[in-house]
Image (cartoon, rainbow, N blue to C red; front, side, top):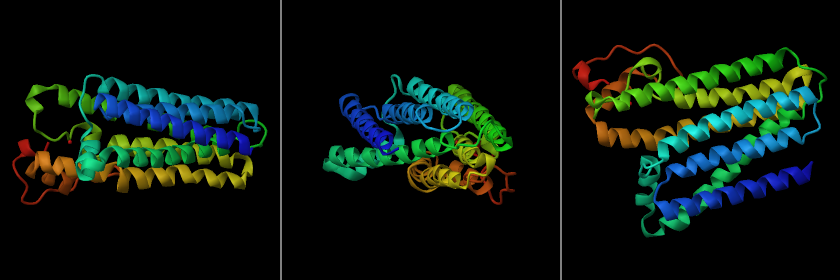
Length: 271
């Protein structure tokens, strides 16, 4: 059991060192997140298939994490091709100044550790020894499908909004973006809830360890590397329009929009 975990740790560290090298060579930090998504998926996929749990559950878990990795990594890679720096990383690089290269390397190794935690949560689900698929397995799969579809819809709605020249300089509040300021982040988080459900199937209480994945993803997305730097960028680039949007729409968990008070005209309330 220790050997696969050590191999996974080395794999994630090397993968993120490669992501660092790509960013330094291309000045395109979008490849960092694409590399991370593919690396976490490959690591978790391998751990799932080499675990000692029920064979059907191994296959289910490996399939789910593989789909997650291919969708997210493929989307980010397509978006990054020909693009410049991700605004979140650009802000960090400016903050780090002359020490940016060294600090970025350290930052990406922290991401490698986070990716390892996610992969180990998948491993915990695949290690569940309960024979046959149970109700919680199917519940986990259903949650995952909802999350995968929701994330894809969110990304597509944002892509279409940005592709319309008439929306230049505006904030996207169409579709799911009118229920959450970051529906893509919410659905990415929701997908990781599937694995502790599967890990607990059949009364496997050790499976509760898999809750580390959604807990970590929530902290990262809502409080560390997701919403805070992205919204700081939006506040600088969209000003009053984003302030009005922020006052009306939940940051993370979807919900009905609040009535704006003293808001700018509708054309300003538009990501």
